[in-house]
Image (tube, rainbow over all chains, first blue to last red):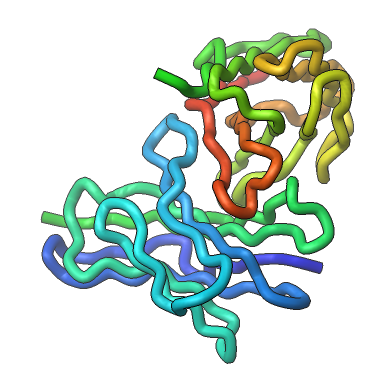
Length: 114
Length: 114
């Protein structure tokens, strides 16, 4: 079965410091991985995706994610956090048998303090 | 501007009532999806549709129904059979190859049982 796990319910970081939001996956075969961000009472916005190729993927708003096959991880990173980055972040993996389905993690709330 | 419109933003339902959540997109996307979001549980797929007049059950379809009479519209009915309907409902759309493009999400409808 395909799944993703976000081990941290909440991440706190000071503005200007680097941030990492963790995601691990479980799939058979090569994974297709995504990160989305959600602001309060809004839908999810696409940040970045990994399909194949370079393990470091760059996305919107200065975010990047590192794919690590040996550790089955796809952590979201940003070198310098902004207060406006405070939001709920979701990792997702595509169902390998039905590409119309994605499995989402439980979400990680990022709090960036001034 | 192209996008997905969900209405209403907030909806209150009495016990035993059916309610219908609207989802309209003008992105010319073929596929549309309904997800339910509960705190700490991520997003769970209710129903999805790849083409007009066709739809498939997701992981938690019981107590819900959908229709896809037009490409632009994918309404979700929460029936009285859904025992715990209070949640945030998200509609999404994609071209038929979401592995490359990901989803576009609406802003959501918050349903509360009173």
